[in-house]
Image 1 (spheres, rainbow, N blue to C red):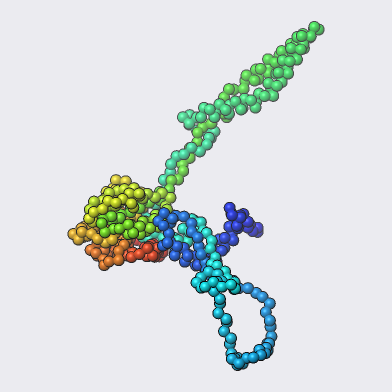
Image 2 (image 1 turned 135 degrees about the horizontal axis):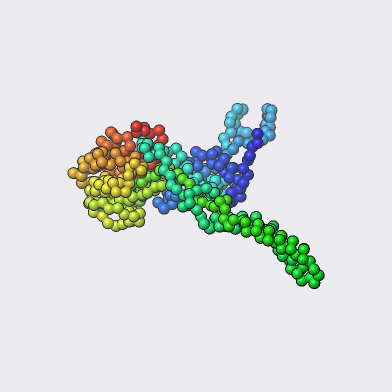
Length: 425
């Protein structure tokens, strides 16, 4: 039995094995630092790596040293404060000995907190490590494998329609050269001998006839080699390549009415980016559809979704109607895993909230794998929350959470996608 140890170095000449061992050892501290950092990052930095800080107290390691054994008696002259058996307190640590608060000092030593960088993949692995897509239904298409026909080199057998003429002629030339090269060399030598005899003034009739006959025989043998043979034929080969059928579309619905300020939109975007990165780690193919709405809904691109200044009143049902329309036109639920996330501050026209409940339960949720409603506000819940609460009570793949500040985004995200969520039959 042989053991192989990978000693290859990474780009910074540090052992990758040792790095992974270090991350596993201080995983809890690193994960805590990552969770704290997610709330401090800009919305455009979520997909990059991160600088992780580990407190120096967590880096301490047990050490072995030679101690003084036995029982020792000491006499300290001038003692007027202590009696036998008293414990002496450690002297207070002076300031200026490393990181942290305190005044500067001209003495003492200390250590700063340990800081190192983790890559994007390491960052995302720690961020989404114990999360999963909840309530996944297995449709028929997930159990089938689609194939597409792709070119796969050449083969020696096939139908005439797939003959590659150029490749076949190349094989023919190579074959004829290989089969006649020695005969052509021999023919050239005989022709040179015959030419020398013809120039010789002496009579060499018998020898010339023999050479001429040998030349005729060699030429006939060379001519007998076919121009193209069945061995030369090359046919274009085609193979079936499996095509992944696991693909998803995420609908981002955001309220852009007058009550949604830029800070609220920024929190919504942070949540949407986390959701997008999480889905990309599960599905190879993913589409994102952005829908913004006030009294009317409109499908837009990412730039307009987050930074357009258009505003107005609030009719939330317009976004749900547009989402249903887009699904009917472009995303067959048998072929796509459909996800939705709606962010709002909760304000909605009172008469419209019951209609949202009807659209959600009868038309939208039967098409979706998972739908999350995030209310971003510090005020009391409005009628839309109350209607959606009835949906959440009866539908396992519908979830709703309340976000008050940036610090709530990641905990809310973890709550929505935690493991061991009840699966839909």
